Length: 304
Image (cartoon, rainbow, N blue to C red; front, side, top):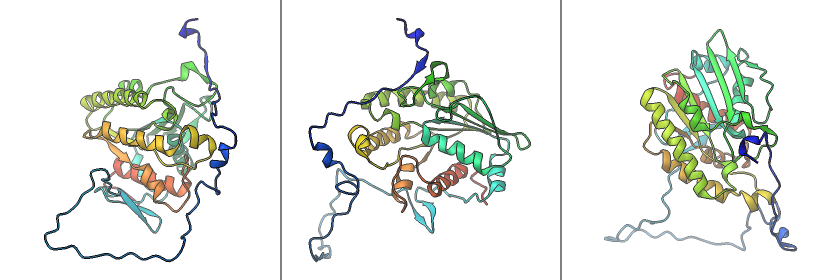
């Protein structure tokens, strides 16, 4: 049978290869996501550096935080000036006259849902599409704002998706004219976590090439990339798609897009640093901070 005969995409199950009683090793609040109590009092003695002692640097660990929260607001340490866009008016003024294209998985869909909920004049068109995978489109006619969302192409763990709705991010970027009033946002990571890393690398290489082509023909296009983030781990996630797989893909993404005129929203640290629990779909206070970073990249001179 030809591949062209395929009509609908669906997902299967997964094979759990745990042996008898091994699932007891993966219990939330029992031996996962629990603190390790101290066995007794302890002390740490810090000695002053000796004169002439050479400085020792780790060749393995090279970490620098990208930001922190203060009074619930994200403060970036990478030089980004994060403005607070409070209320519909401030967001509308930022997006006025702009087209915002969102591509990715359900973590990007959260941002479309945030804009829909935050902007009363932004009206979503009923395209008759699935609420899980879209595509979606919303328009504020008076302020000339258009927002679209489309899920990335397979691998995709969404079920019952018509094949005709599949689009690859690279192909979508090649269809854009771009320009100073075009904002492109994408995130792709979770659905590829259960596949070999080489699959992810090839996908990002194609997206990178499309980004380069878009910036060549329209250098003022604003391109924003959402990174991966840590999740709440339960048995299925722990075995098949744990944070170990996510952090490796996150490192690959940062390396592949390094040096390009793109902006990163560091979802990994914005989730990790917050007092709310880790979740594949971060809670509203974290989403609001992520959107403030997005708006700050889009409108660096504005804020409310």
